Length: 388
Image (cartoon, rainbow, N blue to C red; front, top):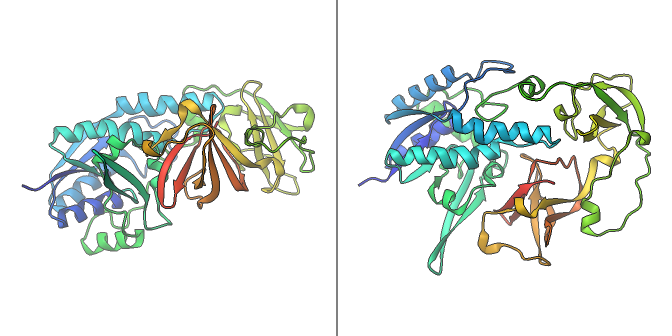
């Protein structure tokens, strides 16, 4: 009897080709479309609207010759992803809803629905790989990067558990995006040349301040410019000191304008300040949501944009490979990234009682609280957590 694989089919080319590949490999494939969002507040365009997505998904399923089902997970998505997003912004952190969507929806609530359809595995169009091996009486699952380094999406899967990986299949992990497009054209799939979705997972491309103002009120505050020659106070070289954020105050710089709410901005951001007349572009180097102040500096090489270390709090550390968990006082060489599409950086992962530190060989630009830091051993993603 054929193994039944339920594919999360979204209307995009990646999930469509993933379904086609599995069908060619002889699996009993079922397409399941999930609707996770109804609100259109803040949407910049309707290019990725629900109506278009479900239409393309259904056309692709019909072309491939697989059953097509639909499920509404919008209640779970709002509770587990969107409410989290609002809480994080309100606290002055910049969340990554795509990471939470994979952990809480695609490989949790969606898997539950797939199992009702008789699924033995659940497949998505992620560019990643998963394999496993026996260790004593246990089977250990490994999350690996996709072979297409321009599209490797293992970062977005960094919060998955061993149980979640045991269900996961990633048919696109061994091929490249251009090959996916070519397969879709050869097979006459309706979405072969459809643009990839952008913006917040399942919400779309939004005007973020407008979207956030559903729950976070606009409030005028000061913009303070910190000069590039600002003298950073001398400190030691322990990893704790290197990871600690410099406490900025208005007295360190000059007021140059007003903003509409510190929680609408993030470190490293350039657009949205509406302040001109400077020798170099302004970048946000710090935010203070308690006092509603944002700090900026001229130039993408402003010294306060760079840090050599970061902390993931103990209670937020996630080990994809629990068997490789470090104990306090232990450390290991690793490769790390602090955002999607960033190249892997040489670093040390250091375990201390307060959590996991990442100490980089080279200073990292725009280390953003709330974003996920991940660490790899060679090509395997081992652990992750939100930056403190």
